[in-house]
View (cartoon, rainbow, N blue to C red):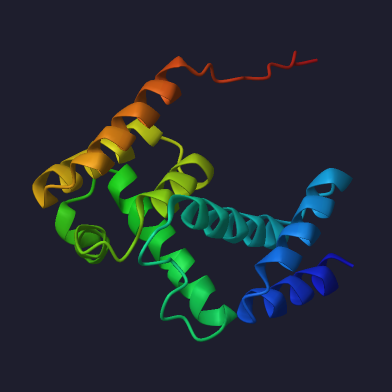
Length: 164
């Protein structure tokens, strides 16, 4: 059932039918079921909504001809952010650095991925702040600093179980 639903959502994303995507994602989230594939589709929908609300000029989805290209772009950005998170040399995520500096990937997209796809969020934010400072993007630096403070205040819930 999840596979059929995922296929339907992918077709709607490819057709840019975001209102219908949102309705399905909202219904899915309300049902309390979990599917890794639909979770990714939900993240893509959330990126779309954040960018639309912010009036982003270069959408994450711009230039993608179909769902496969959107998915590949998403996975590539996640992978490059993971390199940032692991503290690898900037040359290992240069493609992402260049896209950020050229405003080809919005802060809104990066924020969504930081919140959903990274463990050491502060480390990624520190590197993004550096990129934005070098690029002279003061609004994004401020946004990163605000997110940094929110993350610092948030407590991490850890569940303990007793060994028997």
